[in-house]
Length: 110
Image: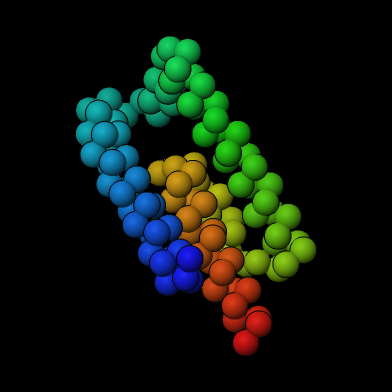
């Protein structure tokens, strides 16, 4: 896979997720701005609970990776990706971190 295709795939996937998130989550949240209730709704049945638990674990792993690489590779601004991985979601934070990391590592190599 070329670097351009890699970047396009990550960017498009994050944009599609963000669009779906915006269409599905924002309207009900505007009607009832109960953040805790919205979070708890992700655990309404065993299947949703499984997916929600997976997302939380992925966020924790991503956060650990970002903090680790901040120390070992001096990747800067990863904390922004950690926050974006909470809201709107891991897909956006992870995609941004991959792009951020790629840019910084490439700049060092040049």
